[in-house]
Length: 623
Image (cartoon, rainbow, N blue to C red; front, side, top):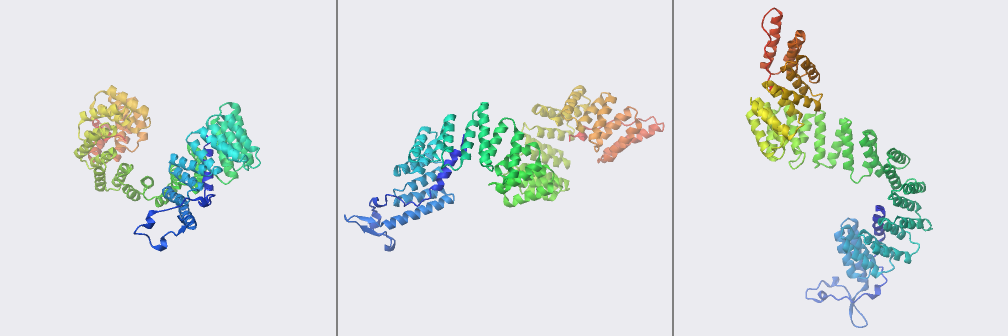
C-alpha cells in the first residue's frame, strides 16, 4: 500500500544527510578529552601527538582545530564508503566521527541510514532517536524516525513524529504525505485523502500531480464502484498535470486491467511509449503481455527498450534470444547468445541454449563443442551429455559417443537420461547384454522411472525375452498409465505372440486416442486387426500409418501383407518393393523380396503362396 511513499521516506532523507559533521551548535561545549596512552612509555612520535592545550583551570584538553579536522576526516571517509556501497566500513568511520564530535545529529542520522541498509532496524532506530534528542528541531531527523517507526508498524509513534514536524513547520509538504500514507496503511482512507488534499491547498507544494496520484492509489484500494471511478479520475488528473508521469500510467493501467479492460490499458501503454521517451517499466509490461499473446515482434521492440535501461541486461538479452529461437531466426539468435556468453562466460544455461541452436541448425561440431563445456555441477549436464552423444553418433563417431556417456555416468550417476543414452549406444553396437546391464544399474537407482523401464523392455526384446518384455511394459503402464510407447509396444508384442489380441486392440486404440497421428501406433492397431482377420479395417489404419511414417520399412511391409490378403496383388507388390528399398538389414531384405517372388510365381501359375508374415516386435520399436 503506497509503497513508493514508504521507500521515498528514506530516499529523500538520505540525500539531505551530507552536511559536514562538525557544523554543530555545541562546538565550545565539548568535554575534556584525556587518553592514558598518550603518556605511556611507548608514545608515538612527537609529530603525531595531538597538541595539548592547557585551559585556565589547569586541565589539559585537545586542540579544537585538531578535533574538528579528525571529525571531518572520518566523516568524509564514511561518506566515501557509503557511496562505494560498503555500509560496514561507513558505520565504522561514522562511529569514529562521534569520538571527535559527540554532539552532531547529522552523524547519528548517517549511522541510521547505513544500519538501515544492512537491515539492522533496531540499531537504525536507536541512532535516529539519538539524532532527535541532540537536535529536537531537526525536521529531517523526525521524518527519518517516523519512517522507521512506520516500517515497524509502530503507527502511533510514527504519527507523533510527523505531527511534531507539522508543529515545527506548518507549511512542510513531506509530513502530510507520510501521514496520509499511515492512514492508508490502517485503511482509514478518508483521513488519508484529507491529508493529500491539504497539499493541494499548500502554495509551497510544487508537485500537485503526486497528490492526485496518491488519492487515486487510496481510492483504488476501495472496491466500491464510486471509489473506483474516483481513482480513475484522480489518475487522469495527475496525468493531465504531468503527461510523462510513467508511474501514473502504469497504475491507471493496473486499474483498467483489474476492471477487465486490458485492451484499454494496452492502448494507453502504447500511446505513452510513442509520445514520450520509452519507459522501461511500461516496456516490461508490454513485452510480457505481447509474449503471452505470441506477438513476438512487438515484444522484441519493447525488450530493446529494456535492454538499454535494465540493471540486469543479460536477463533481457536472454528473453530476446528465446524470442528469436521461437521465431526460428536462428542466425540472429546465435549472434545474440554468443554476445551474452562473452559477457557471462560462466553461464551454463546460455551455453546450453547456444549449443541447442547449433544442433537445430545442423552445426553438429559446434554443438558438441559447447555441450561438452557444460560443467558437471550444472543442472544441464545430463542433457548436454545426451545431446552431445546423439550428435557424435550422427557423425559416425560411435565409440567417442560411448566414451562420453561412460564418463558422464561416472561423473553424475544421478542422471537417468544418461543411462538411457548409454544403453541405446550399446544397442547400436548390438551389445545387448551390456545395454541391459546399464539399464539394470539405472533401475536400481530409479526404480520408478518409466522410460528407463521401457528401454529395458525393448533391449530384452532384442534378446528374444518376450516374457520379460511383457512384464516390463506392464510395469511401465503401472508407473505411467498414459505412456503411449509402453501401450504400443505391449500391444504389438502380444500381436506378434498371437496372445491377448482383444486386450492388445484395447491398448492400441487407447494409444491412438492419445496420439492419433503417430504412425507406429496406427500400424500396431492395423496389425492387430490383421491378426484378427479384420483385413478391410486393418488396411484403413495401415494406410494411415504409412502416410505418417512413409520411410519405415516394417509399416510398408505390413500394408503389403494386408493388400495381398485382400487380393490387391499389384498394391501388395508395390508396398513390398518399397519395404525392401527402405530396409537396411540384408536378411530382412531377402525375406521381403521372397514375398515378391512368391507373388510373381503365383501370377505365373505357381501354386506357391507368399511367405507368412514373420516380423518381430524388435523391428517395430516406438519412435
